[in-house]
Image (tube, rainbow, N blue to C red; front, side):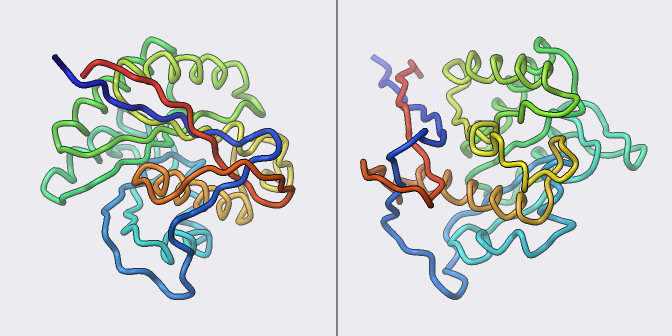
Length: 233
């Protein structure tokens, strides 16, 4: 009999929940214990063009490798430059690198719910082949991608159990955070990028069981709750 596998859905609590970490954030960079690759298009590429946004990851125990670039697509080559590796190809390129977790934030330049579901299946298969885990960010429902983002987020939830993956609800985390998005779209400024990096660190902490959720009233801390779903392996 196959053992159930626990899947987690990360989201910001509406009110009254705070994240309690079992390991505090050190002043200096922690000893790196896990290799993490962050895959993303121009939205997550803020982590590259605004390096200071990476500080939460630099100070964490996660060795973060950026595979972000403008116009990156999940399965097709991107448009900038003309021949750019897809998200899947970037993941394949790390087969010999002992990666522990892949964080995927690509998809804003992709089209079609069916295509997304297929891409998720292929990427998940490659990640599992490497013995790694997969965390996928929801798409922010904002700007000129509202309709697509809603349909994509629905696919993410439907595919979560099937693919045995984890979801970081970036759409909920960033909801109505207008100071993070000066253009009114999905592309962040440095402040938004910093919050993105912090969210990724917190999701990784939860993934590794280094954080717990406690019921307590707070108005200043952005935090996560987890919903556990059982799926047959």
